[in-house]
Length: 326
Picture (tube, rainbow, N blue to C red):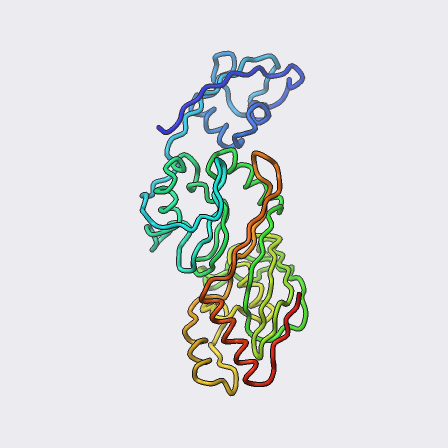
């Protein structure tokens, strides 16, 4: 047991006829309805000293007693793994995740993940589902992630994600030259054959990606990409869908290609870049306690900087200097 607290409230008379779980959600907005329903089933919520079902109706005037008992929500081990923490307060952690780090344990990756590191750094996250992780980045994508340190923060952040209120911007380098920015509105679901991949699928969930050109190279383009929705592999799938897969994406980019007349050093840079060229450089959200909008930005990591420099040099060597866009 990690935490215990006790609350007493009176259900207003005007709520008569509401379901018990609806009334509880209004009385205790810091907790999700599903969590309150679980506590109802466990007998931790009493109305006038009696256990009620979620679907029962209230009459108004009942005294509600709620005993909050937070137990461990996670079965994973804490591990002493370094985290690049950009911001921290009592409600939030913002982390700059390196490429190569898995966010959440899964088959084949039960340790060494960001979640394992979070449990070591902040043991109280044991009481928050998924150790406070409310959104993810792919293993080989670097950049900013927010973690909820409390149930209040988790509820607020999840609601913002569902309402598409997060600001999430990425730097991406894609294959081929893109002449102008645009938007991709194409649903994403599981690939019909390879279930480990995602694909544009008419039966999938709504997925919207916006992009603008930042810099063009001889055979590649650097983009600033903004997510409106947050589907698994969304940017990777959408860019492959418009035939401009992310440079280095070994799942969605198809056969590896070297631009014509590339010198050996440039070919080596391309071959040695083993991850998708994608970095979450900007994150913004409404703070769950202060209700103020705050945002963070980080520079692209060294491997992408080196890749960017090589692409510029290749363009210069072929007298096709890339154009920058503000």
